[in-house]
Image 1: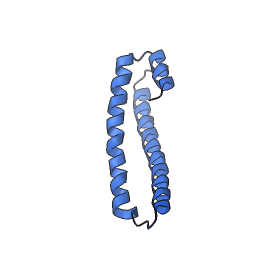
Image 2: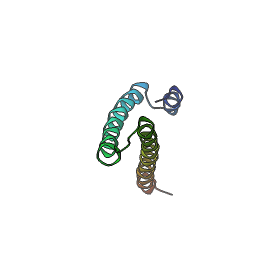
Image 3: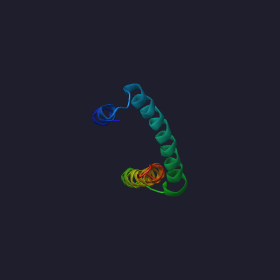
Image 4: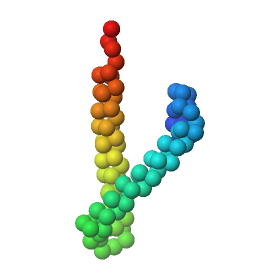
Length: 91
């Protein structure tokens, strides 16, 4: 987590120790996600015959993985927000 995002969360009222705990959890979860993409590479994409091909393939996979994770996170947060907003009394 960048120091800017850490500071922004603290500014919103999240205790610094909670921000750090959440960062540690996020780092662990994303390592697991990265390992899954590594297996995808090893199983389906490791046919490159040169270092340049392998580097390009891994860079493309990293970009696609970043987009996939961001999309999944956005969808999950949207669902969570909808549930929270649905419980607010509009009166």
